[in-house]
Image 1 (cartoon, rainbow, N blue to C red):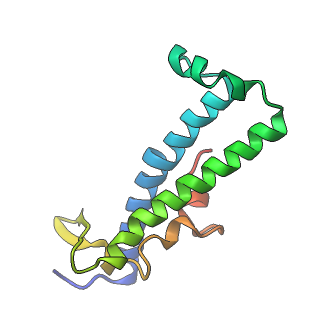
Image 2: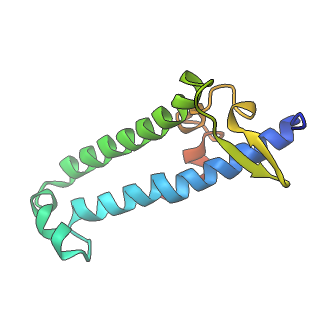
Image 3: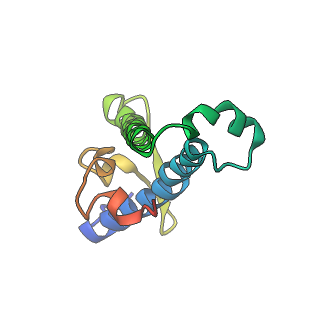
Length: 128
């Protein structure tokens, strides 16, 4: 494998981040918020979570905040596995027809999900 320059590392980081945020973070929160607000079309879930739709807006917002933190922590902990068990677990991404271990693109694999500034994945890619 070739050594990545900083621009390539940033590009790979953004590719992973955009997919994680759109397909996991936003997707889970969108569905969860629909359950909380009673706006889901899934009649089984609507019935299951109907008590949440009766909560006041403040309480619904606090549940949304909790879910947001839980999803962020889950994503962080998933990526952290590759740091903690770096000899046993590998995560590769294909970029320009070569495969790279994501640990070669991040200082701390899951940290991008926790950054609250404009460089963090959530600020960059989330639509929620």
